[in-house]
Length: 82
Image 1 (cartoon, rainbow, N blue to C red):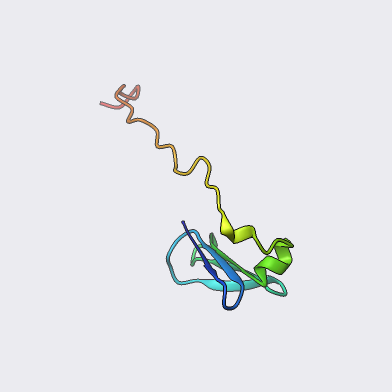
Image 2 (cartoon, helix red, strand yellow):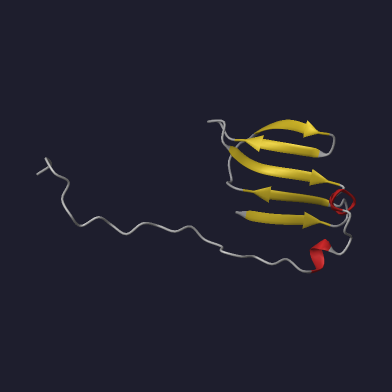
């Protein structure tokens, strides 16, 4: 995931995956990007500080529980498979 903010145009983009996208306008200034399979690939928010009613929002960003838990490899054979 990649989060970018452009203060010159007050735009925030959250990219979940880098791919070719199709954009759907959710509402004025908010767009959703979908990949070829229809999965969400990104979100764009224009006039971000106005919409969040918080001009100081991007002075500090806190990330919690970042990362994906990957299950351990199963070492026990599956019954019926040899």
